[in-house]
Figure 1 (cartoon, one colour):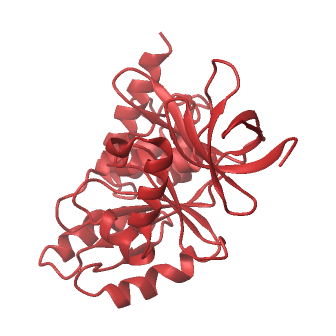
Figure 2: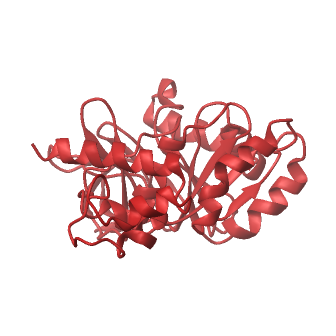
Figure 3: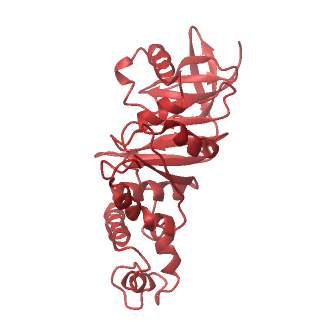
Length: 298
């Protein structure tokens, strides 16, 4: 091999990346120079250097997701077709985390669906009720029981996943590992192969991972540990209502063009909340995120 090659970043840790070439072979690479801004899903141009590779350029991205920790916002996945948010009847899911994930996806132009797992458990009716506001604003909610009925769950999910690159998101305990292992029989082998290449087995559950579900490499699942707290610093307070469909639906009815939908007279959003047309919990989450975004400006 000689010259620049095209490849897909399927895993990274620090300044070490695994790049999959067009032939399906995977190579241990590092970026040229000190800057390291690759993420899983990136298409890169790279060149062979000894027994490793050097990443020389990142191709333009179709979209990019950010995560937020206590200290900073960092990009972590790109070039996605869709987002699957996995929640469960037990443990009870966080509506705030769910809302942030949907806002991040909407901001990036990524289609999203929710999958409710463990629908064989008694609390299913209550979980459905908590998800009803999301159905009402046009988000499709699929129901699965990954352990109790894996065949039916696979039949529900597979048609939507087929031929797409899907980021799978789910808090601990919702069954994300069960889903990955159900749809990708050699998932553990793929993790082991990449960890061996990175010589960092201890990092197998702490970094974003790209899996192919089929030998033709048409369908991919991208997994990241835990329920990432999505970074929303790329969103302004003015943009926020436009990224929440239920809020957006009534924002045009406000008396003032720059209404924040918090206290202004003649606010169409507040009127819709009072009329029961916007879920009170969703409106509370909107206010919390708006306050955060406004604090970040100062």
